[in-house]
Amino acid sequence: MANRIKSAVKKHRQSLKRRARNQHVRSSLRTIIKKFHALIESNDTEGASTALRDVVRTLDKAATKGVIKKRTASRRVSRLSIMVHKLQA
Image (cartoon, rainbow, N blue to C red):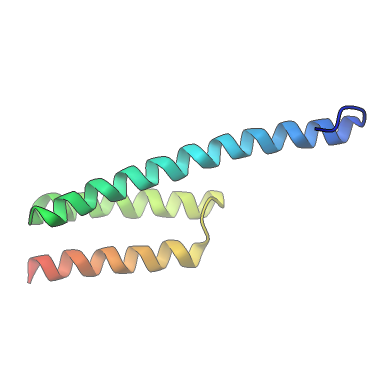
């Protein structure tokens, strides 16, 4: 870590904050997607469609904050919604 230049110290402090925030968002994203997959496995149509809304909201927030890229979020939403539609059919 830089310890002499004030701007470098501040930049390091900011990067640690961003890293902690990104880890939290990424972890919660993984958790909510795992819960969604569990509902898909149990053939719970109602729960899966409700969980899909939560997953889409979380993915969009993560993309807006820059934790994941916008196209990655879009691709994941697409794949998860296809799973729900197959379950309902």
